[in-house]
Each structure stands twice: as C-alpha cells, then as structure tokens.
Length: 52
View 1 (cartoon, rainbow, N blue to C red):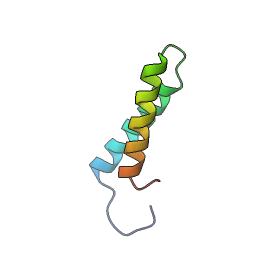
View 2: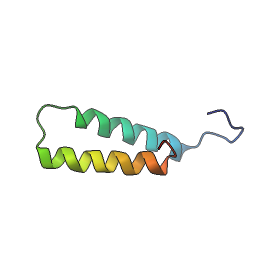
View 3: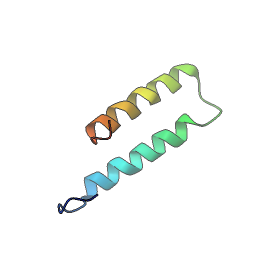
C-alpha cells in the first residue's frame, strides 16, 4: 500500500479470506463444482479489493 490511508482491520480480513480461498482452491480433494464456486468468489473478492 503506497497511500497514506491507514491499513484497516477489514482490509486485513479480506486479505486473509482471499488467502484461505486460494489455498482451498488448490486442494486436491474438492469437486469441480466447488472449484468453480471458489474461483467465482475469489474473482469477486479481488474485484472488491481493487486488484482487478
């Protein structure tokens, strides 16, 4: 973060949620349906965080 705005608890929470979703996405024991839901949730979260 290069801006002068403070880093908030909500931003930290979103980052940790994103990391957890990405970790789950790369697990071997998930169905294709769950994989698609995870990809969609990750994309939505990245968009809301301004990453894409």
